[in-house]
Length: 358
Image 1 (tube, rainbow, N blue to C red):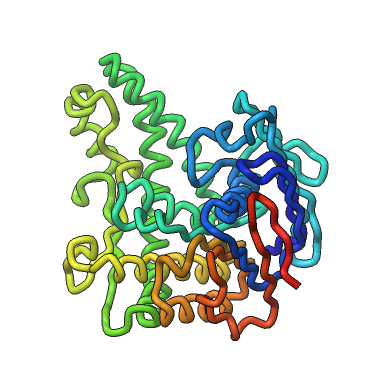
Image 2 (image 1 turned 45 degrees about the vertical axis):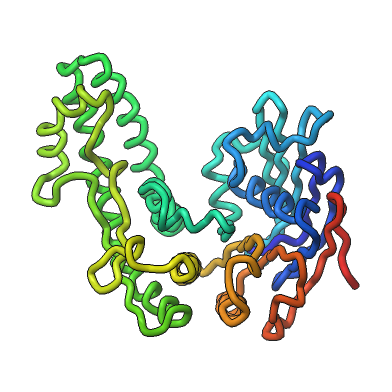
């Protein structure tokens, strides 16, 4: 997947931006606050219909404007597509792909796969289990056609069941339990198999970035291992009513990373956690490519601030080997060793204006 053209209007401090990226490495250089991260954010919104910096999408509309517009031409294999998003200050959003309105945001995510590494991405390891579930589900969504349907049906049933437990209407639980069980056990099986398949990729990139260490990924079910989901839901009714939500199920699962049987969150330094994060992202991209034959657009914000020169070089080399289109921000490109890359473009960013450096 390659972005051939990106146009951004009224997005934060980006009043009017138009550029043609290279299929290889795109470096956005500029001082802090110049608009580099905002440009990455606009690509992310184009692909995901949401920001990675705020849950309130209207907040990114430039002051004094009613709406922002992000437009792109991207190539999937040999076919070019036109994709545009218009987001209004009242939170309305309009998405068009090749001139047709998209009713489902999931269709958008399928069309333009994007992955991102930012200084805040370390929360994948230090934050809530929800972030680790999202890490797994991004791959599942792209490589397993049935996953999205099971996930959608599960979420709908979970919402209904939570309403019932808040109201104490136990007699209506069996129907929604059956929907949760049918879809939840399929989700659990798919995620469990994914973690097994992901482990060799994690091994490879941990060895590249943190040699001498071995990290094991373990999938933790959202209920007791010796129980079926049906048994777990039956046993949890009193706890659910007390808590006012469903306390068991795949929506409570987690991905545990261990080194020598100990959780990495307790034993790794912050520097090691940053490198492990990069290894997990690379493993994700590699498995995605192996299963689909596609590449993703990779966004890396403020790489020099996150890694030392040796590991910056290593990460850039590994990204190059995966043949992804990459966008990297930096305050000084001399901090980046990108000699391995044949296709490189540098863009200077200043006060929301982005110009290619020739």
